[in-house]
Length: 434
Image (tube, rainbow, N blue to C red; front, side, top):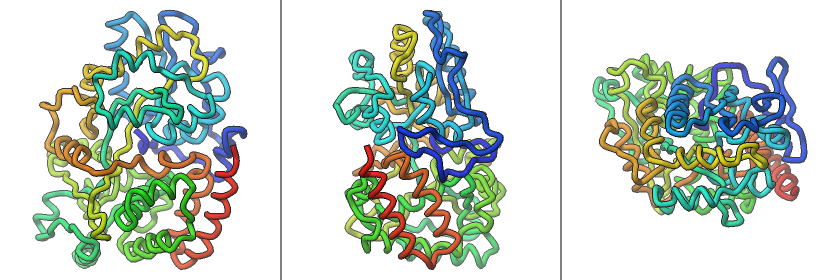
């Protein structure tokens, strides 16, 4: 899942992902991301190598159970090469240009299309001829490259929203806010009541992007989000300035010390009832290891800001698998992807990780928790779905420009005009490159 970094220190994003033509630079002490074995991928017909970013305990275990079931069915072993989630993200360019594993975990949408367009991934139309009936049209669209070919097999999806503890809201008599003014008023009340209104940890630099997205599409709509992420709209547009103005209004209610805190650490303040709310993906539930605590977790859609757009857009990142440019075991890869595209594979994953919902429209939802059912309803009922800033835009732009820029804003919200001018200058350079 995108947003599952481990608690290992993350190197600076600046200087990383300088475009597909450049090698990713590394922070000291973090090993290079490389494929399993010295040759990159196994040529053994009974083995498929897989590069995994599932370094957190819950998804790591869930994937292991899928691969065990696949081996039992096919006799093929999945040789998993797991790396710290953030390290995997930051080194993906150089990894795919080298000798990558046969298959690798990745994300739907622009991030998938970017590598497909660079010929760093193999099309898998043959696989989709067999699994296509398992997925709705929205998932099919998310799995295609710009050339119309399939490059991706989706496994699960999940919404970003505002998470809270039902018991905390009941104790204080809080009501779920549906408008921006009501949201700010609630934050003020939580602060008076001795709570951290909004849990926040941005040590790994990506969580802040989720808050930007929520405010942006609530304020300016889905189409503007798409144009901005694609480099077509200007970051100096007054619409973008308005996003930061709204965000600045919320900053007094964000958790202090966010630069030194991971998302997991921030989640623990929601678990311990020290924080009232948390803007994050539903994977936050992975940090609720006690069933009673998890049963107390709930969420609501980010409040309306502009009545023209209401709450009609939901950020719903979709995770799955891609095939590297020259897999050694093509036959084994096809068998694995065909299996990963079945409702049976999704059920295995969902049994181990109840924080997400199936990408397949044929998956059994009868065992969904109330939280999963609500997530499914939110995603299926949305007018528009987004993927998350660093999936809806170029990876070199989001890593080298947006992550440090958002952190700079969070630490000094008064220098927005010059910051946006800087972002726009860098965007033009990056999007003009091949």
